[in-house]
Image (cartoon, rainbow, N blue to C red):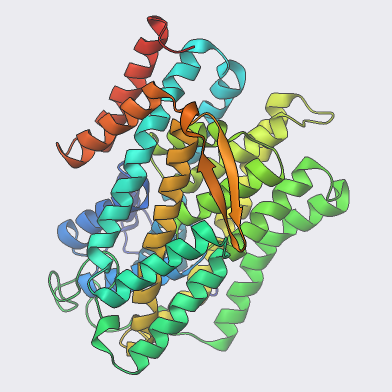
Length: 468
């Protein structure tokens, strides 16, 4: 935020060194946002195709370096990656344009769907639609495990880190920050020792191929605004901390911690600091807390919200707006339920995404300076591997709560996890989930057609009386 003031019209370059006009930047980032379906894996693929292959704004190496840093951060890596590249190309203004436009369609879409769900969610045909959506969600999460795993688990060391992360989080309930920090430390030490196992080129591709720095619009040199300064770092941190925590403090002082808005502000602010590993890892944490601790939602409703996020553009983490909406809708106080729900959803969105701009605008200059550091590269690669195990944990959690009506808590000493009651299997949910997996993996059917097909099937099953 410490950038020097500048005047730009719609058709003048934001940064003379790049020569990309403000109008073009807005059009490109709006296009990225409207095409960003399918969770972080699909969104990152869209950005790579448009920014690296089509527009040639940044090189393959810079794209992957930025991506691996964003995967290290708490929160949604796809939105943070858009903010990072927008900032790298066009300073703070570019980061705000990229990151803001990336989430705007999702904010509008999820709010509309939350209203519909709150008003009509218990109506049979609406419930049937979401019944079909949940079946496809499992296939989508499994596809994310496979896609990221293929690109990051290149050797036994990376496979071992992914397996350890899964066992730790699923069977021993090891917190996400511990898993990510441990993986990062292992990778840092391995990279510093120059072990080949930790130089795998990141989690989403190889930096050895594709567009080079010299061939990109940005070029090989480090932009002047990307060089960190003490004054600029402190000023930026102060501004974004005030934007993030100012509303939280005001709500707590006015309403108190026991009020639902105070709970939303505190919970999602803490989540923004401690949930690592990208959108899927965040959702595992939110599902546990929102369902089991606060009682804002039932497991099935969390899956309904995820189905909404999967079928709308923007980050998958926009499901948190739905969580905040339902929490306030069911505890509106003196407000009408819909007004309270709307405010709760917007509050959850604000405290979730505002820190994302903080992490990028404060940290990215230092990451750019360290772009060729082997130890940092090793840490980022190890974290990517651990994230695969975290996503697999989420996939199994979704499978259990989608296919089985009853879940039993199992414990043997330090080992404890949720296990399905086999007799409670929902045959139609199982068949729909299997069909979605086969369609996406065997026949390469896209995410949107799969979601549409399972949703339509859910409605048909309701109409013929197969489900209630």
